[in-house]
View (cartoon, rainbow, N blue to C red):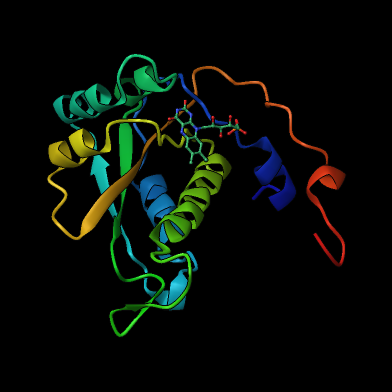
Length: 180
Ligand SMILES: Cc1cc2nc3c(=O)[nH]c(=O)nc-3n(C[C@H](O)[C@H](O)[C@H](O)COP(=O)(O)O)c2cc1C
């Protein structure tokens, strides 16, 4: 297993994939990393749709549209993971919102998505989180029921091309000591 720092720094958003199956064992490891993600009061509000069918991937691609840089990846990648969240669960107690931020499902799904991407990278697989698409269209195509939202579509497969690392802000640009 690679060093955690290397995994975190080496993971990239990959938008070009090889025509090569993802082993079932690797897929299970990726799903397991979601299973063990932390969540609000352990509510585990995530639901994951594993899409391999080419026609279904094309439907998702339609939701992304032509301008999203990850559009091609949706049909190239052998597996597409669709992250959905149960509403009114994370951040709620006895049906009532508990904080000023309301529903925390986006937060919990973000953590799950990062676990997914880091685990995939550790296994030699690539991913790209996508969030810029027609969520209504994608949700309909996937049959997401009321009370749930489709949040992110994440292609998974072996990378065909590496991506350069986009520049990061310096640590001292975002770190505040003692006070903002
Ligand atoms: C919430 C979220 C939504 C994103 N949506 C898209 C997207 O719709 N299309 C895309 O090509 N990349 C998308 N990305 C990938 C980012 O562009 C990428 O993470 C960022 O440029 C940093 O590059 P890196 O992941 O290689 O470090 C998204 C990333 C996040 C975290």
